[in-house]
Length: 103
Image (cartoon, rainbow, N blue to C red; front, side, top):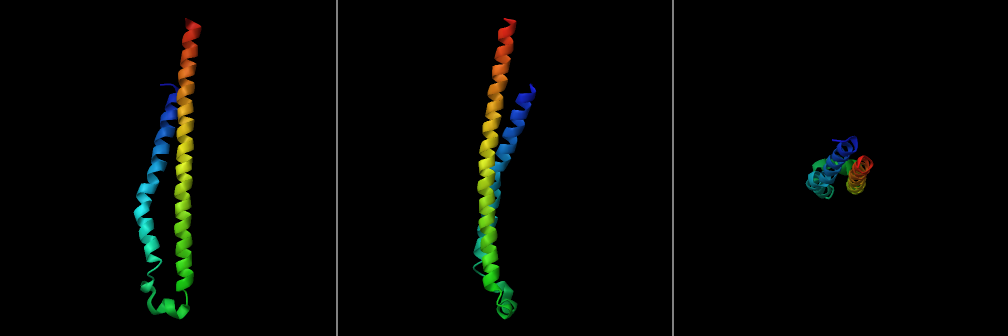
């Protein structure tokens, strides 16, 4: 197996892993967002400190950032997949050129 072929396979594996992140984070993120609307666990402490609004806002911001990360990882996965495909094609072209020189 050529170095390009190995690199392409490695990149495809990485891209596949990045694509799967959203599947693993979707449910926990949804639960986290739901909890930002139910801050009863803070009890009297939250009321006394008037912190529920700030906590809710912070949780909403964290959820948005997590979604943005997922989108960024999906874009990275797409790019890595495209580079991997280019490596595969380059490997084929190099092999064909080498056969042409011998023949």
